[in-house]
Amino acid sequence: MTSGSERRGLPPREPSTWLVWLLAATFVGLGVLFVLAPGLGALVFGLPAPEGTSFGYLPAIGLRDLAFGIYLLILSLTATRRIVGLIFGATVLIPIGDMTIIAVERGLEAAGYLLLHGFSGATMLAASIWLLVRSKHDNMGGMPS
Image (tube, rainbow, N blue to C red; front, side):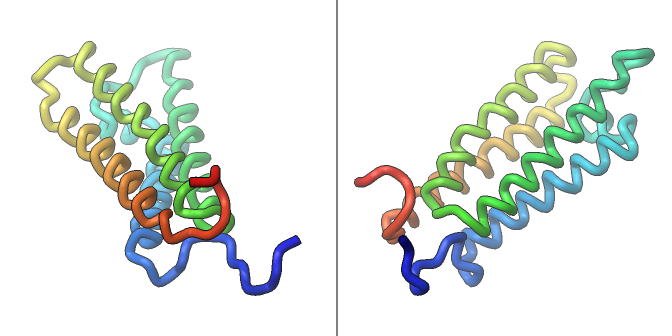
């Protein structure tokens, strides 16, 4: 049973919370872009849009990003910094995978896109570390320290 003084969610006045909200909004925006304008989404990602039935993968990517952005918003309102930090840490796999796909398909000619996905991964890793360091101040959630 929890008392009324215990609060779930990230503290709204903390810069780390703003970062989570900014990243959540970015993923929601990317998701909407891929769903509503898949060809433009592919261009932003760094690969040409496939033709034929393969084109259907682009909205699927959009739904992945849209769902992730919504997960982050929900977690920011209900979870501790530790939990959100762990989610960001696990999610670093997405930009690493994206970079690998672009590197295999386009090589170094796509250096700008590789840097974009690398920056995305570095931002998620930094957010993860920041939230986990700040989580030492959390008194609830996660595994005991």
